[in-house]
Image 1 (cartoon, rainbow, N blue to C red):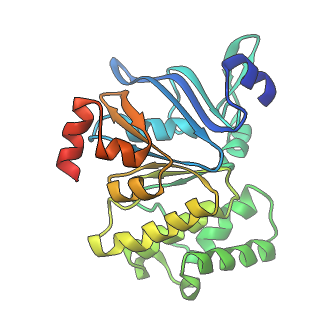
Image 2: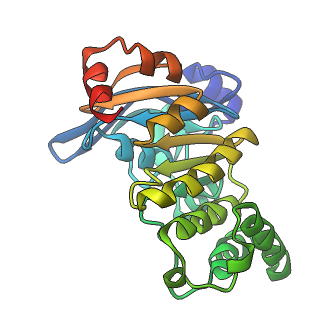
Length: 267
C-alpha cells in the first residue's frame, strides 16, 4: 500500500487536494459514461457540478466513494485511493472492511434522502458512528442532538421519516452524513426531489457548511447556489468536462457554446 505522500509525488497531486481525479473513465458494458474526467478540489473548498441529465455527473460522484468502480484513471480522496491499494504499480481492490473504513471519511447525501424508515431521526444519526466507528451510544447521542440542532431540527429527534417533510428529511440526511466526521461531503442533486418552497431550508444548511470550511462536491441544478457558494464550477456534458471556472465569471460569460446553450435554458 502506497502512502499519501507517495501518491502525491507519483500522480502530481497538489498538497492541499482533497479530491483529485485524472483521466477518470467509467463504462457500463459498451457504454462509456465518463471519458476522462480531470478535477482537483482543494481542502475547504466547494466544487459545484452542473450539466444535463445523462452527462455523467452522478456517476462521477459515486466513483469518488467507490459506489461505482472506475474503469480507468486515478481518483484519490485526501491523497489515497478509496477502493484500491496500489502495489508495484498495479491497483488491487481492498476488502470490504477496509473499504468501509475509508468510506467513513466520505459523507454522501442523496436526492432521495435514503433514511432508514423504521428509525427515528436520532436513531438514523447514531447507527453508523456506533456500528462503524465504535462510538459509545451516549457519545453518539450527544453528537446527534448537537447536529440536529445545527440543521434546525432539535425538536424532531424522535420523529420518523414519514412524519417529516422532504426538506426536513434531507436536513436529517445531511446531519447523518456529518455524524461520521467526514473529510468531504458529496451531494447528489440534494434538492431535486423537494417541493420548491422546501429547497431554501436545505440550501441554508449547505451554505452554513461551506462557510464553516467543509469540503464539498455538489451536483446541482441550483445555479444561484453555485454562483454564490461555489469556489469552482464544472460543466459536464456527454461524459467530459466541457468547461470549468470561477462560478460568477463562468455563469456570466461562458466560453463554450455548449455551456452557453445549457445555461440559457436553466437561468
